[in-house]
Structures are given as C-alpha cells and as structure tokens.
Length: 396
Figure 1 (cartoon, rainbow, N blue to C red):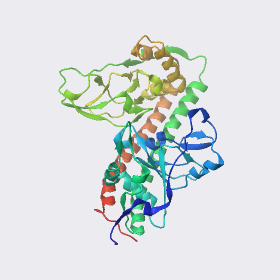
Figure 2 (figure 1 turned 90 degrees about the horizontal axis):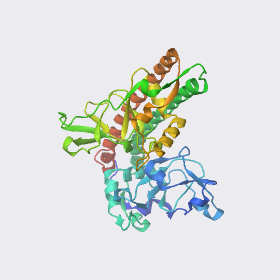
Figure 3 (figure 1 turned 120 degrees about the vertical axis):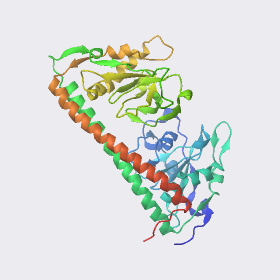
C-alpha cells in the first residue's frame, strides 16, 4: 500500500470554490430547486428526492448549478460546530445553492469526492475545520482558508476502497430508513381508508376520554432512580426519536416527571402543530418524559388506532386550533382537550384487524431502527480509524 501524504485542499479542485445565490423569500416558489442552509444541516446526502424550495434562476446564474459529487460547506452557523458543516450532492437534476454555502468540485482523477466528504465528517476532519472557524455575530469559515487546508491524499485506489466500506454502510442505513417510511405510510393510508373514507353513518360517536387514560403515572420525589433517560418534546417529531438524554436525577429538569410504558402515545401539549408526538415502544425502566407531553394510555382501544386517530392532518390541525384558543401565554393543550376528542367508533372486528396490521408494521420499524443503530455505530467507529490511516483496507 502507498503512503499517505497531505496536500493543500485546492490542489484537488476541478474548479475554483464558489458561493451560491442570494434569493429573497418574495421571489421564491417557482424555478429550480435550491439547497438552503436548512438542507445542509438536515441532510448529509442531498439528491433528487430531497425536498427543496424553488427559485427563479437567470441564464447568468446557471454557473451555480450542482453536479453529482459536488461538496457543499456551510459558510456560517449560529453555533461554532456548525460552521463548515459538509454535505454532498448525489443527484442528477438541475439544482442550485444559496449564498451561505460554498461549493467545492473535486477532480475525481486526483481524489474521490466521497473520500473527502467522509474525511470532513470524521473527528480528524472536523478538528481540522475548527482551525479556520472565526467568530463574530455568528461562526463562519472563509473560502480562502478552506482551500488552503492540508488534507490527506492516499492513493486513489485506497480512497475508493475506503469509500466502498463506508458507503455500503450508509446505503444499508438509507435503505432501512426508506423501508420505515414506506411501512409508516402504509399504516397511515390504511387508517384513512378504513376509518375516514369508509366510515359508516351507523358508527356511534364517542369521546376519546372514555377509552384512554392520560398522565396516569408520575415520577415520585422519593423515586429510587439515581439516573434517568429523558425525552423532551423537541426530541421527537412525527414518531421519530432523535435521542435521549442520560441525566443524573439531581441534574434532571423539573419537567422530567412523566413515566411511560410500552405503547403509550406521547403528544406535545405546547404548540401541537409542530408534530412533536410519537408512540413509545419497549421503553427502559428509567425512561422519563417531559411534562410538556400528554401521555395517552389506550384502555379499550388498540394503541395504534389511538395513535393514528390523534395524528391525522385534520386532527393535528383541530388540536392546534384548540391550543390557539387557550388562555395560556403559549398555545397549549390540556389533557382534557385530548380526552374531549370525538370520533366515530368502528366495529370491534375492523379495529382488531387494523391493530394487527399496524402492530406488525411497527414491529418491523422497530427492528429496522435497531439495525440502523447497529450499522451507524459500526460506521462511526470505523470512520475515524479509516480517515486517520489507523485501519487500512485491502486494495484489490
């Protein structure tokens, strides 16, 4: 295997660095998709399926079009760690990018753009990036500093071998995420078809409170727990938990008071239109959620039926209107507002059929998330070792 050497980043460029377009919000809505700061911080890989705003683009601005494997760096961020955040464009459509981003186009005969993407994602690359971050009102980087960073340049065959290892793990992770989206959409579609579109006039209208309990379990002050895993409202969106905080009980916020059990639905009572809700599956015994959630426990209904009942677009819009009409400082719901939800009660057999299908889908989703966690841990373990040369791959 050849030896690694460091070279100035600009020696690997196919074209000079370029900043993007400045398009005010008043002109947006039609034209070409544009990568904004939002996409950079939300997605590592940006492609033809990534949702983006449309902007008008003149002929003179077509030099800001992206091509496959272009690297994008955030020029600015409100936090220091966000400055220089990297994403890579993996699409084939005509897409432009905004002025707060720097485009970097790599000469693939000299270096693999994906290798450099993984390098700047690694702790080694992030540490190198931190050396050029400046701080004013916000954190930022300059293209003139970025182009002069010394980056590793292994033999191109070794770069591609490293990329093959890491990208195969990312592909598995992406496939599992896509499978989960499909499974979630199937259950949502079935609920809408059976219980909204095919609802019958003879179904009796009932209140949800007659079939569920709310906020039934609270963490006592004399709890024996010394540490907890904590879920706040901002860490779950449309069923996706972004992470749990592990806290010593003495450091836990005063709102860490709700206990949950398997199949409980947690629904944010503050600004419910932000879709901070989800269903808890196989929680650890020390999981505690914020008092900003209403915890809904199904009693005489299937929990998946209750979950989809509360999370249809029409219901979230209705609950948002209830919250907006509250007398509190911020739009918020009370547990009694959720208990007061009225719906037509379907036949027991039809609900049992739905529950069996939805539960099976959620079991598959949970299993996929376990695999995602495992593959992500393996990738994150390998990444710094491969990028530093500590672990070498065999070149065929």
